Amino acid sequence: MDAFFAAVEQRDNPDLRGKPVAVGFDGPRGVVATASYEARRYGVHSAMAMAKAKRLCPELVVIGSDHAHYKEVSIQVHEIFRRYTDVIEPLSIDEAFLDVTESKIGDVTAEYIAQEIRRSIREELHLTASAGVSYNKFLAKIASDYNKPDGLFVVTYEQAEDFISTLPIGKFWGVGEKTAQIMHKMGIFNGAQLRQCSLGHLIEVFGKIGQVYYDFARGIDDRPVETIRLRKSVGCEQTFLDDIHKKSAILIELYHIVTELVRRLDKSGFSGCTLTLKVKYNDFVQVTRSYTQSKAFQRKDDILPVAKKLIGQVDTETKPIRLMGLSVSNPQDELRRREWVEGMLDFKD
Image 1 (cartoon, rainbow, N blue to C red):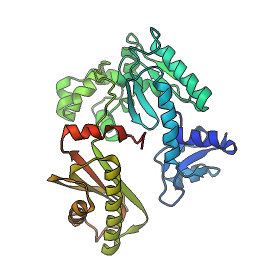
Image 2 (spheres, rainbow, N blue to C red; image 1 turned 90 degrees about the vertical axis):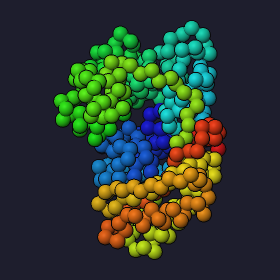
Image 3 (cartoon, rainbow, N blue to C red; image 1 turned 30 degrees about the horizontal axis):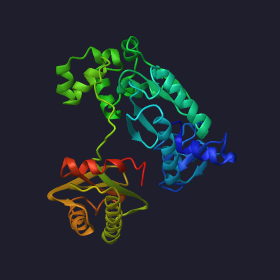
Image 4 (cartoon, one colour; image 1 turned 45 degrees about the horizontal axis):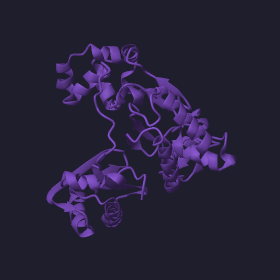
């Protein structure tokens, strides 16, 4: 979906149409969740500090998030998907992979189905969506970003080698900023240069994921579209309006975060054996501490004592804290994990 949260707000409120809109918290520590394309022309983008976004675009209209409503719209989008296939793998509330190898409407091309889905979303939901079509997930994902907004891009098997050759290394799925910097130092700036690097060297530098980079450079991605995706963790975090440093304030906030974490664990049905604390200081340096036990973390009485031990392992005296979070991971067994799948991306209550 194109600028999904902002697009929903503009659809529902005609006064916002054509104006630069950012969805997110309008406060000193607020962050942009989604920016409309009008706002993006000013350099505003997701994950940007709201204060910076407002400096870049003084006319920016900031709207608070209404996640429940966005979820309802997401369900409507998925209902359109299901007219064509049931093999759907959600990536987020506004993005999914569809395998249309055997579609519900017979022997038609994937490009035709993508066009029909986009048309239905436009006519029925009054929103726009962009689509990427290819023979594997890696290329389809990259293609989906090529003709935004409201676009369609196709990469055929015959076109793949040339397409990948000119693809900037930072566009490769799984290559973040730090990995891109390492590759740049290796003289790798695009797919063609990545293809020249041996498998052994990529594994030596990047470990097991080196095999993935080696395959992607050759257009190889054998991962199926998975209709069942397993939740691996549940967490929550809080960015504070003012940095905190007093021990009493830290423990109070930690208690609130534990309470919210328990609520999310109850809602998802998830439990895991590893508790992880994340702390971000006012200089943006981030540290984590984890503890693993044989018993699953599910209740406040299980989590709070361990959370207090973990916070005692980080520096809370000399450096004020900007953000604090907790997460539970490492589920006990596969069977119970499968029971948590339906709620993984929060498409349904």
